[in-house]
Image (cartoon, rainbow, N blue to C red; front, side, top):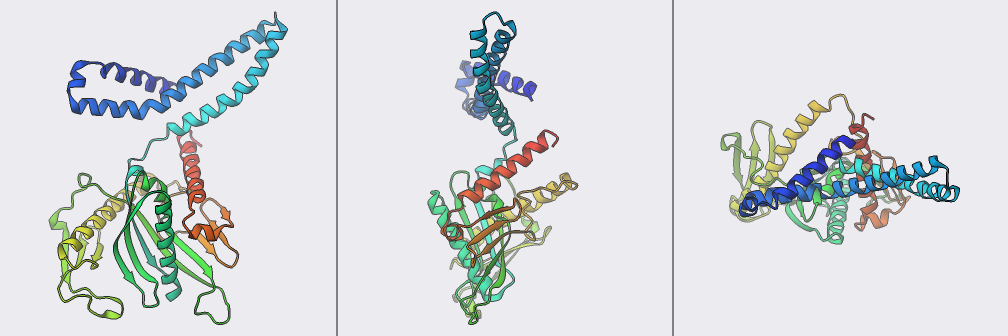
Length: 357
């Protein structure tokens, strides 16, 4: 690890020298490239230098203790080393964390899809509750939510909703929400007070930038049809709804909320591009990680990740064995503790993997 850190420090110094050269300053592309690289390395180099300074102080104190000619000075050195030992351990942990490769998707916006699963009307109502939960979480964090497609259920819930969440590092915070969310509660329609279990699925994709993936027209089948709302009634009198199918993967997206066929197509292309890229990435990841079960963030939508138990006010995230008794505040958008716990678990898993377990 420390050999690697030395190389990073040398590269950081080299970039500093490059940024002082007139030819680099005059070239906007080079200036931007090297400035970004310098910024990316800044924190790890700063922490490494702090570690080296503390390690030198620690070693100097050991020399004083080993010398033994001045007992009072040696005692002061021992006391200082007791503090430095803890500081060095913390700095090593921080360096390990900083050396985990950054996922470029973390900075991106997210496309989130929520679908009612088993449980009939109650599943649809819970889908609406979870959609509202994410909207409140977004509001608390200064993120922007835009609905792309809303398919309402007759009982007032949702069959399906697709929406974007935009802001700084959105995918970093919401990426672990993919999976099956199970709810245990007494439905409003239940007259005898029995607790029912229902489920919804949540899928979270990083929003794809236009330069990242190109969908070939010959791979797309686009159908135009008339929009229909709950109960099958016609939403408008024009054929504006759009269904886009990516033929190689079989992935299909339907959009009908807008009255404009062009707008429905634009939204549909945004969603299908993110789905297709995620599909291919998951395929590649499955090949690489075929023999290694990941603790957090597999994104497998068949995996039950969380249970919301309303009678007991309890939330359990099954991937990290986290149990909280603040379900009411969670449903009001207070997801910070869950998100932070999932991130810590993912980082610990990545650190274990990078150091051979």
